[in-house]
Amino acid sequence: MFLQLTLSGASQGAIYALIALSLTVVYRSTTIVNFGHGDFVMAGAFLAYMLVIGVGVAFLPASVLAIVAMFALGLCFSRGLIRPIKGGPHIGLALMSISFGFMLRGIARTVWGREVLPMPRVFDIDPIFIGSVVITGDALFTIGIVAVLLAAFFALLQFTDIGKMVQAVYQSERGARLIGINVGRFHDFSWGIGAALGAVAGVLIAPISFLHPDLGASFLIKGFAAMTLGGFGSLGGAVVGGLLLGVAEQYSGAYLDTALIDITAYLLIVVVLIARPRGLFGRKVVVKV
Image (tube, rainbow, N blue to C red):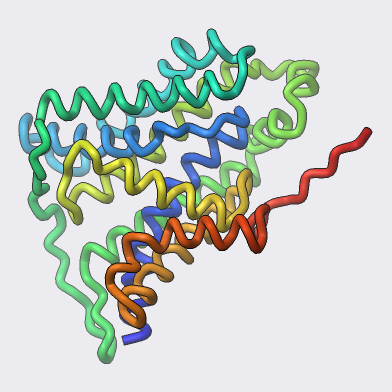
């Protein structure tokens, strides 16, 4: 039972890790927390659903189209709505992200109402039995896709000029401008990448969960909990935090009370903020006077 719970938690936690990572990409690049990000995840899921059910596109190309569309949406959101108010207070940026998220949610409610929509099964993969542990096709697919994406993402950051650019902008926007980096364009690209990663999470959620316009709200909390646990600004911490949260939900539901599954993320945020506010991998900020 313990191994089965761990596997199920890792499968769910992989999705949380993607959401936390997409939040962290934007935060680390722009110092802005996207409080409307859950609705970007929801929009990615509904775009895939619309293409599969409404248009008849196969799931894989529909997923690619949804991810590309969300990248474009994130880029346009940054250029059209965030960049004009970038010099203002952070509360204005937070309100803008919340407002845009509610706009996406309102569009989904207008089109689909409050119905709960099932996505047809996408991959008919036979489960794998290892002793008493059952590895379902959905879990295998989710963990595999997330593992490949995370490996590619971290390789991109570690071994390419794009990764060096990310480090330069994160350490000093002024210094990045002095060496010729177009910081405004970089911020736009970061919002696009964040939205695309959120769409990947939405696409993975779609076949294993019922879709509804308020879907993103709960996953936003899971993403924040994973970020808090891993440490704000830590890309690796976001991944570890998501996996730990998924496993913690399964353990608490099985060994304590199933009602705890829904509040594990909230409890985790409270405990981490009290015990270790900077998270597992967050760095302590040192202010030099």
